[in-house]
Length: 285
Image: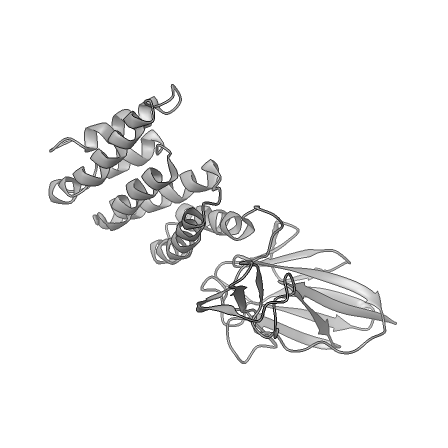
């Protein structure tokens, strides 16, 4: 008889016969701490040799193998279930071994090697250290090497929220993306240009929509820290801010312009974006 499991983060979860509910609520069988996951987001249903996943009407939707689904969808070994920014892998294996434990979906980070691992584990599976970083609890998809899977998923969901003009969701996603970007820059880890540009599109759009300079200023500061120049359309959105708000961007824009000039000036590709930021560095620009 087949045995069904979900692989999530660094854990494997046994799926018993019947319905296993996935969601943000502690009452769910599998609790996932993610603001983009609904309280009852989806369910995996096992009946004999049949397995399928059920969309429970979550606002941010459900994907299987990167294809949006509604209602019930059959599952096969290796299928990837995406809810919010989280990805779970459905596995089929022979019946043997012990039952899995009920996970929370929380990760912690090793203070020795910085690897993320389940908060329930007594020690880091990478280096064996037991000391962990206490000030944060992580939730996200663990990738390999320097691949930033969590940011990639956040960027994808951000694009959807922008398309639907769900501004509260946009801001929630930006807060998580900001933490990810700032942590990587502080650790001198690379950030993909496409990811940062999409985040900047969201941040500048939110700033323009709410006539609030906060996210615009953060965008200029983060490009300066990353040693990059924002796309021209990002600067154009910032220029639509009310005059008083736009004036408060002058110090950040000027700092970015000076930093680029000290590095030898913008590339041909970056010149339009640089010129737009330079105009923001001028009072009334």
